[in-house]
Length: 315
Image (cartoon, rainbow, N blue to C red; front, side, top):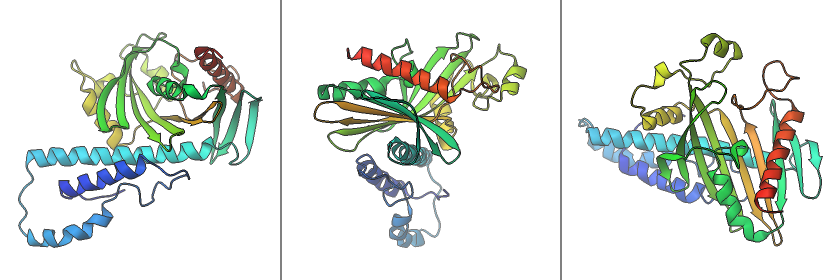
């Protein structure tokens, strides 16, 4: 999406429109290119006459440039999350297309849906207590990802808060197999569609500080998401600058999220894993040569997590 720089005040108005419109999304699946998306087209004409008056434009101050950079980053983050939520909602519907079920009973189900060229795994789990709605939302939002639920994880640091419901988090932890440092950056959004429906959407990337790992092994495995420490890291890590580059260049790898719905006697949790690259802490499937996991292994991992959630709420 190519957009020129415009006056800061008009960009702010445009972004405020996003916060009020997108954060309170409609029940239907949104179009990522619809009128609610961040756009400068509608305000360009209102600024046209003023621009004609400034035939000799003064150089922007450093403060103005910095403000424009922040607004550009915020707009890009909102655009990325629009796309993530669009795919999340489309794949969360178990009545939308053919589902290949691996588990289907009254407490929960696991299925794979074909989306373009991907087999998208998802599960639906029922917690038989509608009073647990807010607790479930808080629990799922705080976890780094589905598979770190109920595990020891580092405290997340807020790198940027674009809106109260759209932030980018950073976590640091160590890969137990290689002893390398891993820096996780996660763009997270919480969208309250109604009093009884909440969407938690996340897209993330793990950046490895692999100074002690054989580069040939990394190249052979094709880990495109690994960025070497020499490229991004030094003695004083600027996580804010790294996060900014990730957002502006759309370098996120993983994409997943939850739709939590409160009914009269239970809470339904739907999880969709549109794109997820398992790190080295996850054992590769023995049936797949490229280190990925087959449907059976992915389904079994989801069953383990579903059981943890049930146990967590004592059901």
